Length: 362
Ligand SMILES: NC(=O)c1ccc[n+]([C@@H]2O[C@H](COP(=O)([O-])OP(=O)(O)OC[C@H]3O[C@@H](n4cnc5c(N)ncnc54)[C@H](OP(=O)(O)O)[C@@H]3O)[C@@H](O)[C@H]2O)c1
Image (cartoon, rainbow, N blue to C red; front, side, top):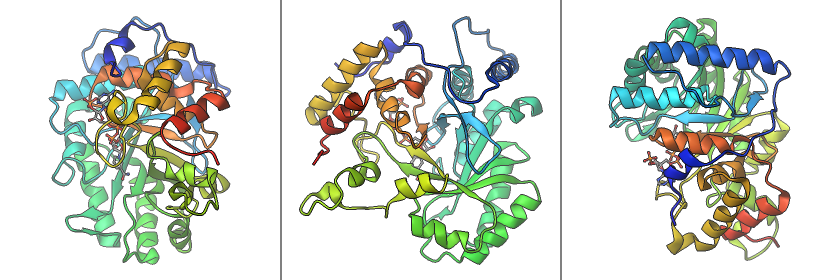
């Protein structure tokens, strides 16, 4: 049986343990206020069910606290404005206050950012309660970390998103021709003007981050990387270190996981449900992942949640405190996945998913 969104609407949720910051009451009140104003803005009825349960993290090297679940907007180009509003308000209702964009999403520059900006139109008080992240650096046929491109791209992102500032700007994919001084000059200007408040990278190795740090003065607080149970080389290589003849042992990212933990860089996991690189979801793929789906279904039954939640929990359970970037366009799947924000999988359960996905414990 494939992981279904229907189960998410009928399941009694396992109740996560409150975690995160000490001012939980104030946070809950703040989250309720955020939801109320957004709901009013969107002319939606208030939800009556319990909401806002996702775990919150203080994000090191920043002044931000945010949900450990992020809504990614890469796939919204075909949605109607109403569907975008419902997707976003559903996320906020779940306590998700962090939204991930890129200038390149949507097939033409800034298209998904503009769809989001035009559809959602946060009031200024709503805007203050959410975090908007976007990325720059991918252009047709090349990667471009020049100062000129970064500045131009951010200005266009601000316009498309209808906002005065970006909470987090990421360099999207490593530019082989990067000149760290150019990045540093761009970041300094963006910070001084108030257009960007925090900075980070995506898909970068530790060496590439260190190279940038030689010139960039702002903390590089984030690295967004591909991670799902079935695409986990950044975790799996370390588990099988130094095993000659075992492909899993190959370090493909020069130790990005340990480097990020050592340097307080928040890792964000993109494509948390994809089998590999944009080739469909492993949930329900019994032809290729029968054992994994059995293991996921067993844990879903144990915790009384959906398989989606278990797939997310495999990432959130890791002590590196990942943020998980969801790419679904379906509000029901946002709700189902959000439940995986803080499920206390045991070590044996976590490893059972890892091995069921095909990884080896030497
Ligand atoms: N930094 C980078 O280089 C990078 C690269 C790629 C993506 N990203 C970011 O990461 C976000 C997530 O990436 P992603 O969209 O690839 O992640 P994902 O959440 O693994 O995949 C989403 C896709 O899987 C489908 N899906 C999810 N759950 C499903 C289920 N249970 N059954 C069937 N289909 C299901 C969704 O369809 P429905 O819409 O129908 O639910 C959607 O097409 C993006 O939005 C973007 O913000 C970053």
